[in-house]
Image (cartoon, rainbow, N blue to C red; front, top):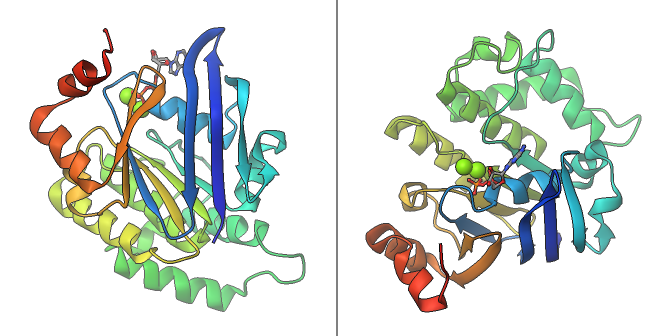
Length: 252
Ligand code: ADP
Ligand code: MG
Ligand code: MG
């Protein structure tokens, strides 16, 4: 498995410091959850890891198996095995889901070792069925006119097809009804294994009833202020975030 190491990460947007020293290590085989109130920098962390140009890293480091991620272009990060499911996936007009997936798979393979069309279709059909996605979605333009639920399922389809080393899933549960939530969770759980590490960002504990994280982290005001096991998520669900603020002496 791979190791993603985030050390003392400081990130600014338009000269405003959002992340103020985040430390986090995610290893293959581990599922981590980050929870926290709105506006505390969870999506900022995801965007910084994937290299969104608007997010400026002013201090600290991100490495994948010792390689400097911050030195990599966005597409290099994906090729190195990082995957980001965004809170708001973008629509790509003119590119079908199927074409997108096939070129993304091939981008991670050596030249001359591209996946055959037959094998691609076979594996795509298998995953479509597993995620209860309509066959014809593969031939539609990526995310164009997709409902919120379809977009999220599509993100998990990408995850299953691309088999990244480390995935960051930002609010993959937002806007999902219970059936879609179950299917999305089923897909994520199927990825479990030594060669897959995952960071699940969520505002609600609900998702964690279906995906049991090994570690739960609480982010507040741009820092990871508390870490624990699944029981921490349960306590947050029951009691909210106030007790952490009191415990740590954090002012609003
Ligand atoms: P969370 O995901 O925890 O809700 P975000 O990372 O989205 O938090 O936001 C953290 C802070 O950064 C907020 O104050 C938000 O307004 C600000 N922010 C996030 N993205 C941008 C952006 N693209 N431009 C300006 N400010 C932003
Ligand atoms: Mg938010
Ligand atoms: Mg967010």
